[in-house]
Image (cartoon, rainbow over all chains, first blue to last red):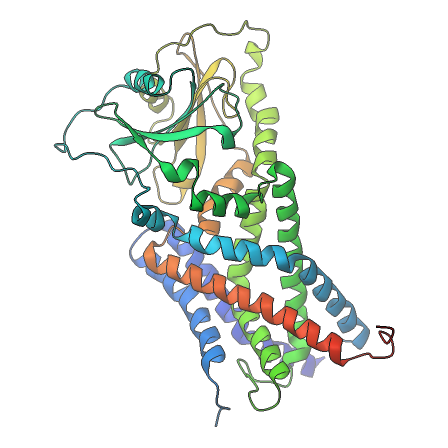
Length: 62
Length: 373
């Protein structure tokens, strides 16, 4: 059981953190303007950046 | 995970995505300009422009606006008045041959609340953005089109869930965000499909589920009419049809007294699907940011102007109200709209790469079973 659980967190740790950040951002902007809005920009912006970086980088990582 | 389990999830993922991909591509493509419909309308000169007047010019009362609207389109009746925070001096008017006419056959325009002057809203009645909207909402096929798209949305959600399950066996030996560039084009796109799919997961789920809810709007409104509205207007069931309506002048004041602290969103005139044959329905929205998406109807007797009932909000109407901002991405300024567009394009890349991976695997693998062709 142990190694399985370890691999679950290894695989899903980062996506889960990003997903929670994104959900928090989507909700925050419903609560108000200004700072609340910028939380949503962070929550949506980080996944977008990571996706674009994967898409645009052509050389194999060192 | 056992290999039979993986194969089963893989089958679910393949078929749920294959069936919905064409529709999802259409939705993503037509949704892209709709994110910016406000800006595009302004650019095309399709947004209503009210004339400059001193800031404190008083507004006409609502009955005067009704008369102005009826003079503007003789032979038609009022269906709705609507308010928009972006245009405090304008009232949106929707008219049609009869109050019960379906929305796509209605005519929408703006009234200057200070003068009663009618200002055209071309984008609300036709044009390119309307084509985009109809393609996005029902593919010009009415309720069956909406329900088909709702079903495709459910398949999309299933594809996301099954894709997430499969992410584990695929990524077990890889570090997060690994994209293998040096092996083959198939592996590169497999890694990109997994990476982009998993980071856009939350957004895609939220937009997918709220889209399904919005696509079921007609059913939700019908449920509200059967359930909540019919109970409120029960005493009027056998009342004779109205021959004339009491003036609309004080409707907003009457509604605000019945539900203090709320803001007007729209008025449904008697006979529409948001009112009864005998009532004006004033829909008020909450005063706070969050509750501004939740509507409370105040039913006002259309001959005596007495308040018949202040509606409870059933949970499904609230779900529909909250779905709108979360689907449109219009509640966090321009940066949110740009990110919404970026995520929309990324979703198209996930859909496209999924299709590509499927065709490559079909061409390459299992020659014996598919050897006949």
